[in-house]
Image (cartoon, rainbow, N blue to C red; front, side, top):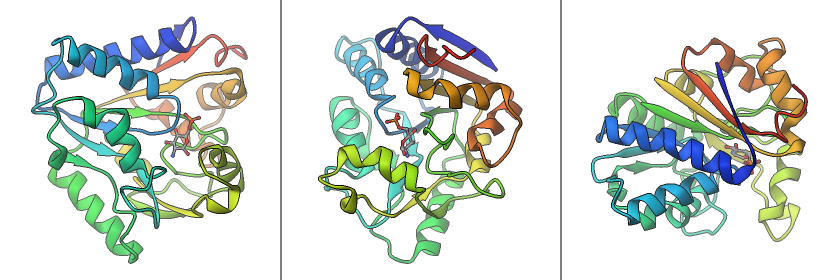
Length: 241
Ligand code: GLP
């Protein structure tokens, strides 16, 4: 596990974007595993900027997102499909038909999850997986639990996740209670993993992720077992090391 220490969020965003840029240059038809949340927004802004300058070409890139709220329409401004379109896909030359997000509108959760696992398999796996880190150690929406979930599954969001994400919704009551998320096994099968972590409020959990025991109670701790992980974190997030 490599820890890439950055000065602040801006520096973090540039460095994380540089790692993704290298991936796209080295393998133009790569499969990117993408994440939502506030942490990767700056990373996406840098990728858009470099694309606009002509430094990057996404025409052969495909993407698979980690998760989606169950029940939200793709055009709902809080859906992760909408997030990806507005923060990245609408501004680069990626072929949108090759960008995948779980289908939040599929009411049959078994079908939604099986379909998504099928897509991941058809794509041949993820070359580079970008991750954020939840305050309770979740990655994607893999919440603390008794065991590491394997494939795509439907989760009941933890009360702390609903609390953390309510800032994006009109009220807490509007936050969906469930989501479809890629499982830990699918995440761990990515060839390379880049996790972006910013802010002092993540310092305690980041210390547990890196130095604590590997346990499904801290889902991201499983990353200690992956052979190619880079954690790009700012000084505030690393303040407890
Ligand atoms: C959400 C997402 C995660 C994300 C996490 C942290 O719950 N499902 O993929 O990593 O929140 O978000 P933020 O970066 O806004 O702290």
